[in-house]
Image (cartoon, rainbow, N blue to C red; front, side, top):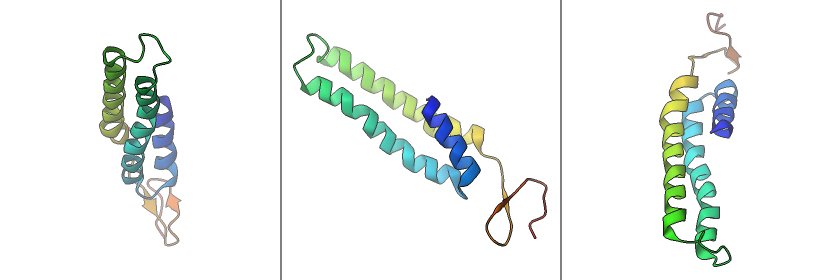
Length: 97
């Protein structure tokens, strides 16, 4: 969640469409976060840890965290921007010329 907040803040400061960019990153990050869970489930090297009772709740937690990032972070971070003719962000209230 902290990394997602950092990415959201970075995109808000740098991108012309931060919400769109962030909502493209969230599903990719979710899939990447699920890979270790699937690998633990598939591997029999961890006694008791590779069962559905331990891996599925962890995967559900990742999905819930991704949903929270998807809906809440863009709503909290985005501020309207004004751009000059060159496409450079101008501070709010500034001239767009």
